[in-house]
Amino acid sequence: MFFHHERNNWEKSVLVLSAIGAGFMAYLLRLHFQDGGSSVCNFGAGFSCEIVNQSAYSTVAGIPVSLLGLTYFAAVFAVTWRNVKDHMRAIQLATLASLVFSFYLSFVEARVLYTFCLFCEASKALMLCILYASFRGTRHAETAVKPEWYALALGCGVAFTWLAMAAQG
Image 1 (cartoon, rainbow, N blue to C red):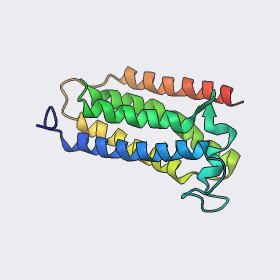
Image 2 (image 1 turned 90 degrees about the vertical axis):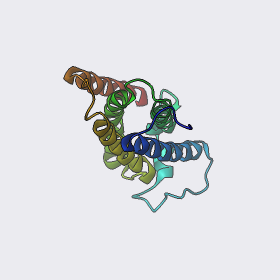
Image 3 (image 1 turned 90 degrees about the horizontal axis):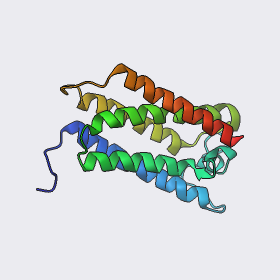
C-alpha cells in the first residue's frame, strides 16, 4: 500500500493545501532573488508581489520570509505524509503561531507598503484552510489540545513577530 494508513479527507486536504502553499512560497523565494523581470502576480501599484518581495520586510535577520513560508508548508506536508503521531494537533499549534506573523505582514502590506502580494495573501488563506482541516481532523480525537497550548502557540507567534519587527528595523 502506498500510504501507511488510510488517510481521512481532512488529512488529504492538508496534503493538497500544503503542497499548493509550498509551490506559492517556492515561486516567491525565486522572485525574491530574481533581479528585475516581471512577476505573474504584478497587477499595478496596489498588487505587486515584486514590490513586497523586494521590500525591507521581505527578510527577517537576512532570511527571506518566503523561505520561512516554504519551511512551514513543507513541514506541514511532511508530518502529514509521514503520519507523525498527533500531527494534526501539531499543525494546529504551528499554524496559529505562524498566522500571527502572517497577519503582521498583511498589516505591513496595507499600511506601510500600500501594495499586496496576491500569492502571500493566498498563502494566508491556505493556512486558514489548513487550520480548519486540522481542527476537523481532530474533532473525534481521544485527547484534545489543552487551551493553554493554544495560548502558548499564540504567544510564540507574538514573540516571533516582535523579534522580526525588531530585526526589520
